Length: 429
Image (cartoon, rainbow, N blue to C red):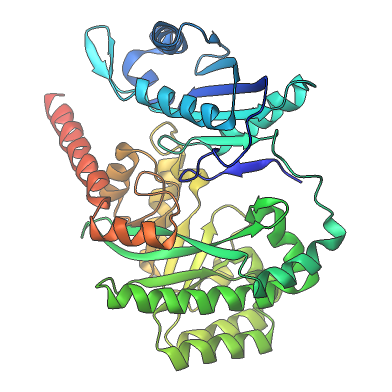
């Protein structure tokens, strides 16, 4: 199986101490492209050295070196998994204070990731591979630790289908929710439900490891109906607590041609009166367009909003786009994450927003991670945003606290400041 990834809200204290536990920590300057624009190519090359110096001054016992222009590598040993998590938290704290770069304060947004392995034996290649995989998933304020040391035996893919059927009735599945924020209203307008699986033997199994197998074995139908029922119950609880938000559920392509599934899903929503949305990818519609469009039209008749997910990531077809009964289009994060450091991506995003508005659809930008990206999307006319700048996926209780405390306002206020700064700079010429 894939090594166990520890969620941001979890700790590693549940594991027993590991003598001579080996950790490889990677730090990446997440906003490197933006800083390079301000500082210039030559000065930007020294950022990794700045990171290395700050860590070395604070924690001199660490073995640290600059690995690339924006990546720093740390090798260390930890007495326990809890010590590894504590180290990541300590590293994050080190960079909350801005850097003085040529007399100006700059914030370095660091993505922090690590892989952990028992010692001995030591597999340096695998340790490096898992640390690099963790770094791909890490974001500022969302460190990722892949715990090879506590990983369970290799997951038997042949028995996964039986395990999935048991998981549905054994309360092993759970949902996390990621908020969507309206750019102009500065309010949370909905949440996306994301399914997770806490396996009794293998620990946390992420969607990429089980959703493809669920689709192949047709277990995806029962799993998605479980998700809809859970989302309906949670949506009712949110409404009772003063947060009447639409909950969006991802629907696999194989289900769009399943008449029985569509009928059951529509009945659940009609009987409950819940405010739900279904997110579907355009490529999944292309598999069987006539059936998919007919079923999605039926879905909208019971009040479910259809959202086109990951637009631009696959083979997008205007012929199908204009026929879909969709009211929302989500721009894939592939374009959004490079919005402020690419010449072409802003053109693609802006044209997509204009196209969606012409088709009377709202636009959601996924993968929004910086105030600058949020500010630019607002100028472009994007309706809603979703991403780690607003919030990572949250458990239900954490979501309620997020909504009660209106934590999304921190991100929207930061984007307002960025807009004012950019405007002032433009006026100065």
